[in-house]
Length: 145
Image (cartoon, rainbow, N blue to C red; front, side, top):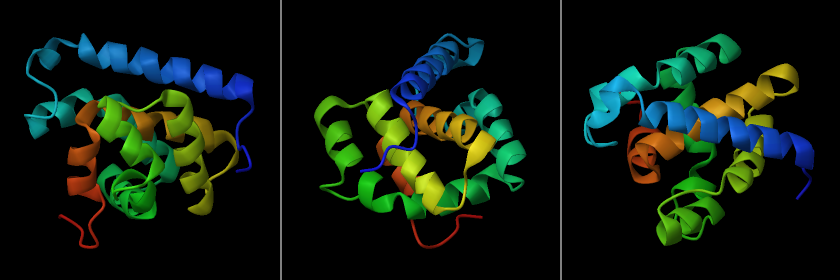
């Protein structure tokens, strides 16, 4: 697989994902269990959803629907690389996620300066709400509006 990011970029993006996830874990509203209260998850993910809206020029929910469908085979279907990782560890390796999800974003037409912050925002959302919840909410063929 051609790499979209250099090893140094992957390391930096992985560190940024960890930083944002740590920030979310210690946010005042995060005392509720992750994934159990959709409203609190959406409140906590303000930074990531704002980044998606700014970078893509579209509503973050609409973008995440498109992204979820584009990444469905890797994320949501049994046998997908990231799906297998989640099933085994209950988490994703940031570096694998950056490479795989970055490739999905490229196929969706994103490149240049928007690619790095967009892959961070999407990865943080997926890890924070959980792969199962992400797939249920964003990978179906019908928009949940």
